[in-house]
Image (cartoon, rainbow, N blue to C red; front, side, top):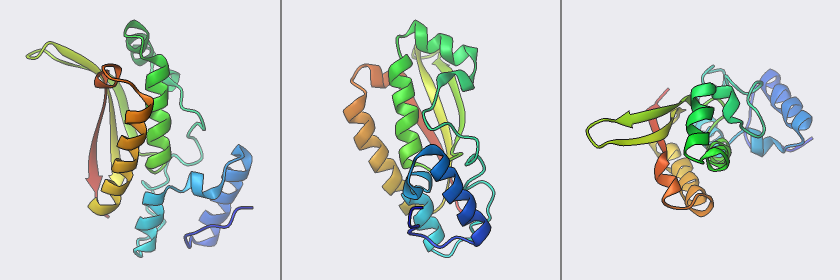
Length: 160
């Protein structure tokens, strides 16, 4: 078993360790830095939103789980691999369960369309900024322009 860098109550700690072992991941890959910082600040780890999707999130995100409309949009715009990469980068930098919606979006005034990924971040603005900077750095390295302009992340911060 991995050594956990944050203190979690036994039932949650055991659940995280089992999940990490079943996926061949380290505990640190399951509990993101943002969650670790949030918990280290003394927040109640039982907050359901934090790890609500922990047991059900895919180790390698697939567009299929977000519906046919998303799959079709990605195929029409040749975004499939890049969109999956974006979801993987989000998974690495934000807590499990943060993604609340993935859908095509359109701005009729600008005549522009894109694949929108919306997430809710539970924690402090400082913890969000640290996670977001990591996400941006990795996303910019992995997804070339102009393709990256068709993949957009929006978010809101929930301070518990």
